[in-house]
Length: 344
Image (cartoon, rainbow, N blue to C red; front, top):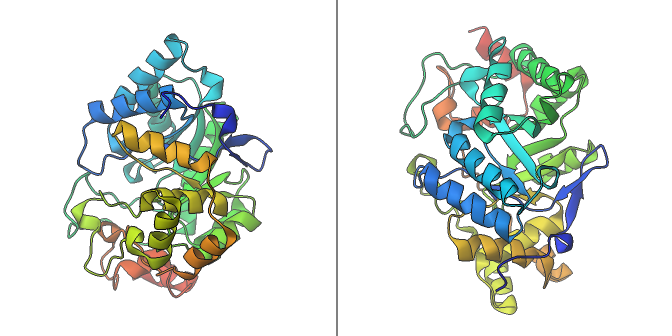
């Protein structure tokens, strides 16, 4: 395998502005298993190889180290700033008035940037939990989604654009019901929606809704997140690589099932952001999307294999009185549920 890929061969996806960004990026969440140094080293190697979209977040606790290697890559002439598309996210404990600006400024300092390309609201409520906490942990101050609270946070994100600190803003971990409630209130609309997307959990309705509103879906856990924390594992989880459609395509193309998941994601139209600190893996992840595409029949078979298996259930964000993690995702589609819970 070559040490560098021709970035001109990497397909792109279009934002509502018409700007095109890479069809695949590198995630930087270490799943509580990898330290900042390992992740930063992977970012540097990935940029050398040809990655141009790097997905970061304040809560990952590694942006300062990533910033060091971003500067190193630019100083060495490997990449120019304008060739990179860097994202970050405001964490749940920084939704208060003025906190979003402070959070963004810190991420910019840590990453060594003057401007962020895309800045997300990581979760649509201020329910905080400490990084690495147990899955049974609960914060007594947690509460259900509130349109008013979310829009106060979103208004601050809009101000970031006004001040030139970020170019685009986005949402993450939303549902159709939540989007229906807030999109009409947005002065600056979201450019992208980060959401869990993999063959066993395709979220077709939400995916189609986002696309219909010119909101680019960015898919986390694109490989089924085999390295996800223990708190995000349940006995009912489905391994994407074991889906019949993925296994069959893997055999037909002679590649690892993980690469079939990425081919499917890119051909479907989302932007997957797989994470790996292993050079061979992140190189293969990028290379697989520029050759040997899946057939229409293989794409159809994977679509039919959807198991509605959500891996990141978010149970650590539940509030007192919530029935279960399903309440976070508006399984019943009811806005009334939030309002009733807020008034309990």
